[in-house]
Image (cartoon, rainbow, N blue to C red; front, side):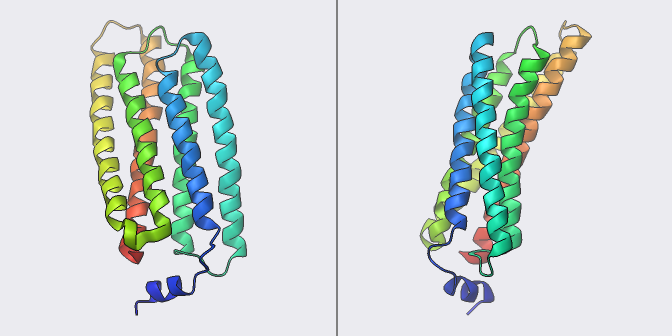
Length: 215
């Protein structure tokens, strides 16, 4: 019997880590929904939605703190504690980038948001849903192996779409007739959104690592 399977055999079935990771992923999905709404909203609505996203970030911070606390207090974990730590960190990073993206829109107040920002927000939203689907499957890796792998592949595709949109956006910014200050504002926002998509992809990679080790 492999050492990883041997360890999982002795892991308590009521492990607190999976529920905490699922809770964090669910918060991410809510943030993703709000983010997409944000980029279709009016200025007044954006400020309200921005506040709701900030609340989700606070929830995620508390849940992530509970995960780290559990890691420090637990001897046996369902997966390598390094993998749990890394997964929790990436989930937190995604949440932070989502929040920073909307905060930059609010603070920079660009005159207009081109259509590719809406498309990017949709990609990020779908990425959070794929993360949540994969995290849900961690409770039963043997049965959910194929579903988690499918989510990881979809996350990779979404990251590719985000990269294409980012390039499209940068080209548009520097070949249009925008004032330098508007270019700066929009580039800052677009870079943060692209970072969120990258963090989602990194989350997919660590999920795939867990599958390889334990499924």
